[in-house]
Image 1 (tube, rainbow, N blue to C red):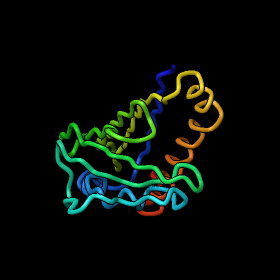
Image 2: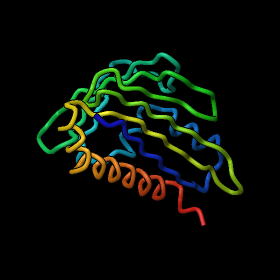
Image 3: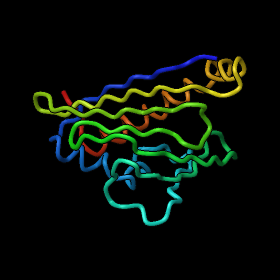
Image 4: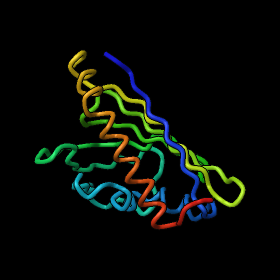
Amino acid sequence: MGFHQLIKLQDIPADLETIWDFISRPENLKLITPDGMDFEIVSSDVPEVMYPGMIIEYRVSPLKGMRQRWVSEITHIQEGRYFVDEQRVGPYTMWHHEHFVEPIDGAVRMKDIISYKLPFGPLGDLAHALFVRRKLESIFEYRRTALEARYGIFK
């Protein structure tokens, strides 16, 4: 019944205000999510910019042909520095995703810390070893590529 963590870093050649503006808008999540996940925000009247306590309902297809409801709460925000989203309803027993941004010389460093636990005890651990970890890695690799296409590659 494992607790898992994935940490991702990406340096983006843009200013902090530009990157914060992009990542703090829920509508932009679709732009950095693989098309095959069929990501859709189903909440009505989602504001342009997130705020602490905001609840957002999505539909995603983590596996082909399987639609999943996912409800997240934005639990913490420090403007221009970080925000945290936590799953309230969805496929994980626990999902806590910290998004950090900080200016570095000529770029912005994004750091994601995703802490999560799968249901079903040992079967969940087996699923993690067989495909869940790889799926999460591929989602974040897609995001890396999408952000590079949008902002360029930091050299």
